[in-house]
Length: 356
Image 1: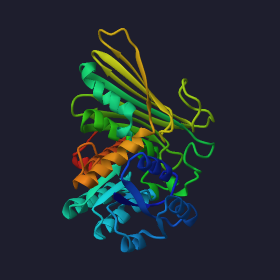
Image 2: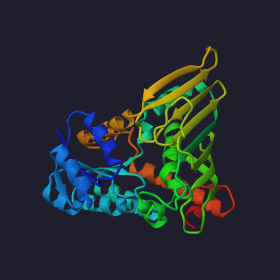
Image 3: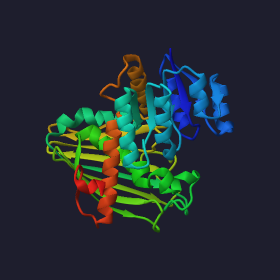
Image 4: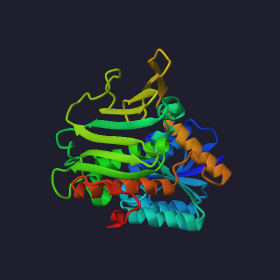
């Protein structure tokens, strides 16, 4: 039996618990949360111990690993504290740090300590996106990929002036706006599908200086020659969703991959994974289109399974998003913000410009 501790009891907790419940041999032994109403209730339901702080949890419990679901600005410090407390396996929600300097320091700490840290980019574990990766060879030479994600926001939420989670509106606590919350997942998927990013260009929109970005329009140039487009936005409509799916929270995510010999289109109706994801494909020599639906909720179960296997094996497998992978995502996000500051100039990753 693998014994897990969980840090935080926000909205994303339920999805991780679903994933844990779909994997045999994993038990939530303790939950640490400053919110006793949600954290205490979840612990009671699971038969787990409840702690007000993770320091108390680390001192009292013998754990095989932890899942860090705290707000963005607390990821860095709590992961460092976990490593110092001897926690050898950590699954941490993204971003690992609210800036690249913190993420770099955490990567160095992980390497020096021998701890295993997996970043919580669950979309690469979604069976729909996995299907796309399996089909890449059938597309011939891939030329172009496009991500478009639009979500519903009430009047004050479109530009992040008002949100149910106040820390998300402050870049000093969240690490940024939609490019951090949404775009980082797409960037991780692009790396999962096509490898490393060579350069980026981007324009962003904010309501005012100091507010997080709410629109992003970017180009990403992959080292393997694929060019990708990344578009993210928020709109004030109550029933946003793909035309084949009932409204489930106001989310419409489309991934298109275009090759010389085929075309794949993926429609994902909500980020949580509470529903089906649709994959439509056309391949040279086939009548097409082929249409398949996959259970998106499996993204959480698959992610937890990879984390649990890493604990059992004593090392992260190649399927996991490592701390180094998470840093590369953060560097791409930072480069896109630098590009915006320079009026859309192409910024190369690894160039000194990234650290200016």
